[in-house]
Image (cartoon, rainbow, N blue to C red; front, side, top):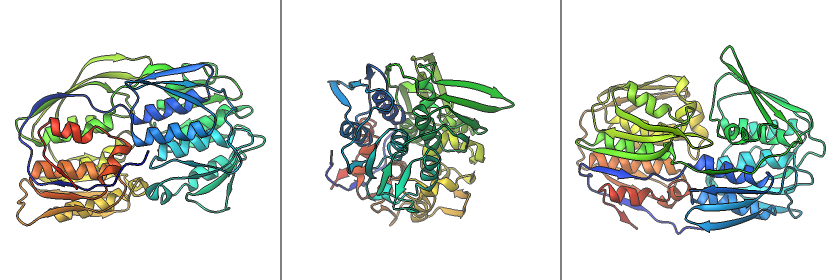
Amino acid sequence: MAIKSFSLIVKKPIKDFKKKIKADSDKSLSIRSFLIGAISQDISKIRNVLESEDVFSTIECLKKLGVKIINRGKGEYHIYGKGLGSLFANKNAALNCGNSGTLARLLIGILSTTPNINVKIYGDKSLNNRSMEKLFKLMENFGAEFLPHNKTKFPINLNSSSLPIGIDYAAGSSAQLKSAVILAGLNSFGCTNILEKQKSRNHTENILAKSSNVIKFKKKNNTNFITIYGKKYLDAIKFSVPSDPSNAAFYVALTLLKKKSSIRINNLNLNESRIGFYSLMKKHGAKIKFINLKKNNIEKVGDLIVKSCKIKPIRASKEYYVSSTDEYPIMFVIAALTKGISVFKGISDLANKESNRINEMKKILKQIGVKCVTKKDEMKIYGLKEIKNQKKIIKVPNLGDHRICMSAVILSLVTGIKAEIKNFETVATSSPSFLNIIKKLGGKFEIR
């Protein structure tokens, strides 16, 4: 579903606000629900789905693979599962993953062990520029083939394994790679064993845990052991997707930085592998409170209350990276507007996101007079108490990176420095309600 390209202009600072909002639904859970529902038995029923470009790309890819999906309206979708190993593609079919690295990696995990798959996989300019070397090598262990050989980026041709056998995998910080291995293991012979010393997002495991015959968990000496039993079957999924904590972080940042402001966000996903940003902000003085905690069948959820306050310079060790990956650009904004030196470690993987988020945020902060010193794995930001906006301007080129665009908006609204952000339509990949919510909070902008 193509969206017309447009630029966003922000000229004026936002006034203080006290609001209750509903953040967009969780993108990670929405995409996973469709993918796992497609290979499950019977009809999966998912409510409150995020209707964003990345999710629409997921739906279109699955339809090309023979999956029937019905939109029941108001964010509810029914997915008619085909069962493990039953997806089918016409020879030389092409699957467009758009801007979504999650979709690309997880779908390749499923297709690598699905019989008789021969497809071309590609994405938009941003996704096609991201290295998939680690993913391709992992799937080759299951017997999949990627052509041309030794190519590490999209577009790529995937030939699925004719005899997939489970593997042993020592997981790193990437939840997408871990999920790809899990999904490939579901249709492989024998067991796939995953050793996880550094816990990453576990949405895939949480959804699959409803089918207890396919996945088992064990923990020993702070190490997680996940076993996938191949060639079983998956039960249909039925749940409501909560709001996305990564999406909500931008409104939280705006609230913390804008004096005399407060916000409440209900039904937020509070999965422990997703709330590193909130833990880090609270550690540095943020007035953040979670209430009404409960479990919604799949995930822990609750309501969030935030009040503006003074933040201390941020010290983010590498341990925070996994649980706050998507929030680093907006944390860089908070650091820039907090007097003192903030230090972010263990961030090298930010260079392989939709853009090189380390370099691009450094350029943006330099435009407003904030000094940044970067190494491959670290960024120091010399935050200022006050930033004078005379003759300054924030310019964001066409990066195809929704998080950079959103961060620039928050920076402009807080400081009053004019921002010109090209190709802002990319925000619709994850946060289609972003501008409407900013407008509700009192922010003003122009679309060109």
